[in-house]
Structures are given as C-alpha cells and as structure tokens.
Amino acid sequence: MKILITGASGNIGLNITEYLLKNHEVVATDINLEPLTKKFLNFNNIIIQKLDITDQESCHHLVNDNFDWVIHLGGIPHPDSSFEELLELNIRGTYNILDSLVGN
Ligand SMILES: NC(=O)c1ccc[n+]([C@@H]2O[C@H](COP(=O)([O-])OP(=O)(O)OC[C@H]3O[C@@H](n4cnc5c(N)ncnc54)[C@H](O)[C@@H]3O)[C@@H](O)[C@H]2O)c1
Image 1 (tube, rainbow, N blue to C red):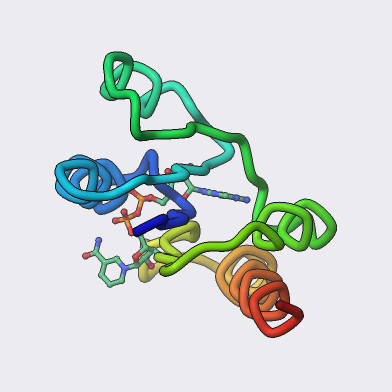
Image 2: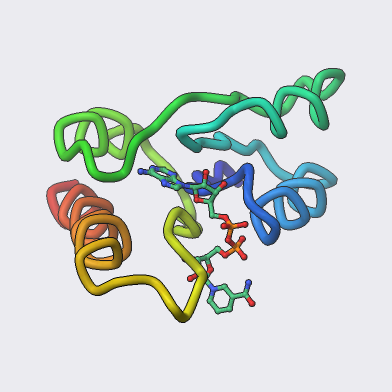
C-alpha cells in the first residue's frame, strides 16, 4: 500500500514510519525533515518530502496523489498550548488535510 504520513519526524511519526516501511511504500512529510533523512537514509521505499500542513495549496497538491491511507500526525501534542497555536496547526492543519482528501 502507499501511505502518506504528516508529522512523520515526530515521536509517533518516526516509529510508525519505521514499522510501515517493512511492508509498504511511505511518503513521509513534515516541516522538519532532518530526523527522517537521518533515520531512513538507506531505505528505498520511502519518499521524504516537506509539507507544511498550514499551507492549504501544498496540502491539496500533495494529497492529490493517490494514497491508500493517510496518517495525520502533524500538530502540537502539548496540553498547555494556547488556543491560537492549536487553532492554526491542529485545527486548520487538520482541516487542510481532510479538505484535500474530500476533493479527491
Ligand atoms: N504523543 C502522544 O501521547 C499523543 C497522544 C494523543 C494524540 N497525539 C497527537 O498525535 C500527533 C503526533 O504526536 P507526537 O507525540 O508524535 O508529536 P511530535 O511533536 O513529536 O510530532 C509532531 C510533528 O509535527 C510536525 N509539525 C509541526 N508543525 C507542522 C506543520 N506546520 N506542518 C507539518 N508538520 C508540522 C513537527 O515538526 C513534528 O515532527 C499530535 O497531533 C498529537 O496531538 C499524541
């Protein structure tokens, strides 16, 4: 299967990417690609690509590709974050990903 992951450089993202690469093709995205490029340098079934989930146009462009699954992890996990931070990233970012999928 072909799987898109957002926030793939994060704690959950790096672990789930490693697991999925055993059997699947993964397009791993994040705004910070360094952890991904370090960890998956020698894998040939991964595409590592920059994606800012707050950028609606980029989300539409990328998600337009055909994926069997999308695992959306881009966001702020901290419970003490301000509403404004969560609004921009967790809410608008999630909206952008879902809106891109609905458009397919
Ligand atoms: N860790 C947990 O226990 C837990 C529990 C429940 C839900 N979650 C949710 O799961 C998701 C991932 O959690 P985590 O612990 O891996 O967090 P994390 O902070 O380790 O990873 C989040 C990733 O999102 C990326 N990111 C930040 N801004 C971005 C943007 N504009 N565009 C694209 N990517 C961006 C970061 O670079 C980071 O790699 C979060 O949304 C979190 O709220 C986590």
